[in-house]
Structures are given as structure tokens and as C-alpha cells.
Image 1 (cartoon, rainbow, N blue to C red):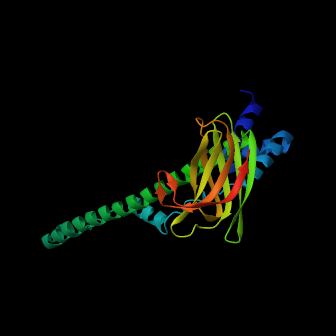
Image 2 (cartoon, one colour; image 1 turned 90 degrees about the horizontal axis):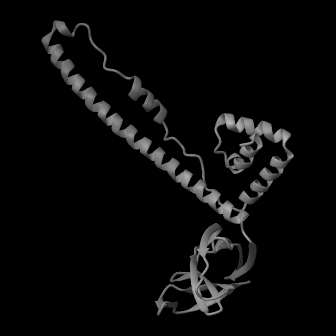
Image 3 (cartoon, rainbow, N blue to C red; image 1 turned 180 degrees about the horizontal axis):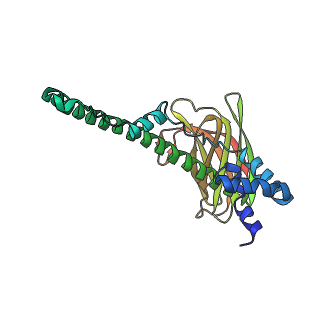
Length: 249
């Protein structure tokens, strides 16, 4: 592998901060000498601004470092005079038993805190993987579609990145308010041979991202309709629905 190819393949890792310390330093030095990589990094950073990264650093519980140190370094102290008095020896035995119980309790607490940190790291890694997957879908899209949504005097936007290779839509919705009680938002494909629901859309004042598979058995997709519809269904169709946005192919 050529040296420059390594930097090309790890551009996204540099942007999201998953490189090792030495790799990160080498990449920064390379950027000072390589206009091509600087431009590519700028494009990736602009793409990432679309996405709700939500990969906040995992916070170590307060006092955990101190408790870890105590759990490792703390040891039972021996009294050099306990052999003189049998009663003191008995007291030492009780104290040792109590110390052992205390140590087991400490180990239980530390184990629980470590499990929480590990779960936080796994959740962060999962979100990061989802971000990278979404970014890949956006960068390989064959077509970009957009629609304005109007609901309750408010406006929201929906951008669709269509990828022919996977027959999927990566849908980014921004500013869609929560649906009224008993209703939901839906995305429907309007095809040559009929219509089919693609997904339910979550209302959020922020940005939501989802991936939807296009139907392949109803002919070409002619348009997509975004609706506000009843959660109650009859024969696979909502009892009531109204269109709040349309994407034309």
C-alpha cells in the first residue's frame, strides 16, 4: 500500500476522532503538506454537519478513579502486638472477616461502575458506526431529493439521498414537531402498480435520520408522500390521513 493511500482510507477516522494518538499526529503533519487531503477533510466535515452525531464522551462516575486506586492498593494492616493477647487475636480475626466483606462490597460496586462505563462505550461506538454508515450512504447517493413539510403552521424539511446500488433511501428530517395524540407521520411510496408505506417518521424538533428500502415489486417509484395519519389501521391502511409533503421523482 502506498503511504498516501493510508491517509485516503483513514480520512473519515481522522474527522470523527477514532485514530490512535501517533496516527492522529502523523495525519495532522500530512495535512500540512497535502492540499488534496485538506480539501477532502473539509468535505467530510461539511457532510457531518447534517448528522445528529450524539456520540458524547462517556463520563466516568464521580470518585471512580479514587475507588479503583483504593481497591487495588488498600491492604489489611497487621498488628505486631496481637500475638501477646488471645483476645486481640480473636478481634483481629473478626476484623479480617469484616475487611474481606468490605472488599467484596467494594469489588461489587467497582464492577457495576465498570459495566456502566463499558455499556456507555458500546453505545457510543454503535452511534459512531451508524454515523459512518449514514455518511457512506450520503456520499454514494445517485440522487438527492428534497421536500418542504407544512404542519400546524410550522415548516419542516426532508432530504432524501437515493442509492441505486442498495435500493435504499437515506432520509433526513429536520424540524418535524411531535404528532398529535392518536396520530403519526408516515412515508408512502407511490408506484406504477400501487402504493406502499415505507416507514413511520418520528417527530422531533431536532434532526432524525432513517434508512428506508424502496419497493421493488410495484414498478417504478413515481413519488413519495409524507402524511399525518391515524394510528388505527383498517385492512392495512390508516383510518384517516392527509398529505403534508410530496417528493416528486
